[in-house]
Length: 68
Image (cartoon, rainbow, N blue to C red):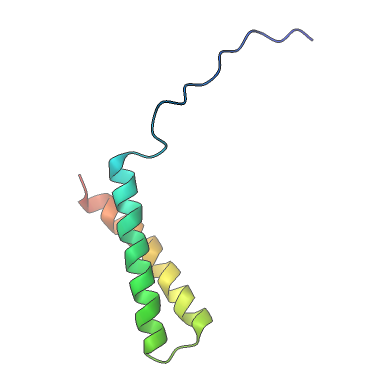
């Protein structure tokens, strides 16, 4: 089979925009904070991690809406 000549993709651009990086950073901080607070409240680690993941997902949706 004949394959057409393909040009290599440009690798100069960033993988994430600054807005996306900030949204993910804030969501990760919210998730870690929620997990630590849940663990300090006496929950088992699997429960605390589940709460942290839920807070991170909610944080992504929340920060995506409020940041520009």
